[in-house]
Length: 539
Image 1 (cartoon, rainbow, N blue to C red):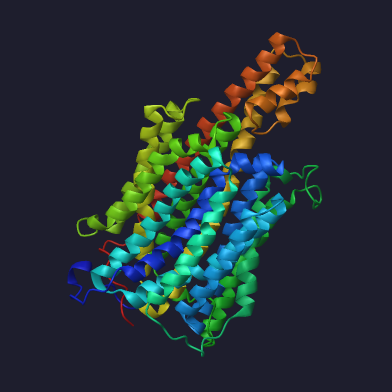
Image 2: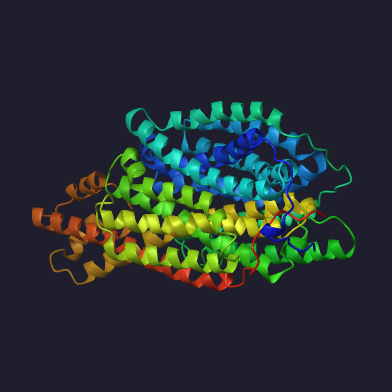
């Protein structure tokens, strides 16, 4: 593997125009805007389609699952046919998917549209890295990589703002309609990018594609259905069972086994001098593996937070998408600016130092949130916690991406992009799914614990209210369920109190568990390199 050149030793090169970077950044932004808009549109979609919040979350998982499963195939398409050509085709497909999204009549069409988005994203993700490597060099390249991270964060900010305003006053559909127009703009600006040439000699490993995609889809689907199908024993809602066991954990185990089979198959192809789906050269050092583990951790934490907050604000508190946007705005702005300005610290601190500090900030913020969160997300202490988490998260995303890119030669830029896409999107799918299952599980446990020793609600009333089976629903819907029982006014008030307190307790414990995961992530961050990132090394 080529050695990494420190940033301060990069030779001065001619500066390129930043106009091509607009097309590249917008290519990242349309993907991030799409997936960030889903939590903001949560309440509107639940009302439009008449489904549970976890069904809308399936749209997020579908997008992330398809990107993660097929992004390595996308990288090979980029190498074989050229980054610019496949980038344009993928942008067209993305625009078509947003047409389905905007006019979807049912939740199933919405999920299909997100899967289509994922298919286009699986090609766009590796193409972006290859396009940066083709169009920029030296310090401009490091800045471009930082801008790519900022575009992701900036799109999240805009998604919450635009989605909040439109979702409150017009509806959630125009939010995705905007992406149709932006996709057309990206296609137009792509003609300012430098043309590249594909490599027809690149062969696509279809067995590797099948193994990798099956592994990622099984893992994502398994985590997404842990709560609905059962954590261990199968629930009545499970489509089938294996000797009474839930299919969800079985899918996760099978997915992990197929992932190991993919690695073995890849090593076998490399030993036979055949083109692998993902060159293991991008993972052959301890530092690169540490960067992947750390990237998975921070993206999963972000996905869990981005699902938990809108769930609580819109579904539990019954507030508007605009309220969600206002509550999350400090976090998203902080992520945006942290991703943009962290590159200024590369000259002073090593990736290992920044990585440890970033995860420590995330853990401290989550612990703080667990103790200060109340039913009012606008409280200053809560906003402070979100800002601190945003600083850590934004810094880590850009840093870890830069470490992966700078560790590999330019010819592997597309493979690094696919590795980043696989890691990010698998983490987003798992983080969203685990957050949903965790919070619902904690809610159920807290309610059952209080009901067991509550003299105000006898067994016959409990069976009518059936609080233990109620998931996260709006307060108005919960009151409607309780009003349909024969409970007295005192008993109804007690049932509402138990559920309200349990929901808040579930959120607090959930934050503490996430904080523990953030602390564990300091371990892989300690394996990050000590050098300062520089340009993508030439072959």
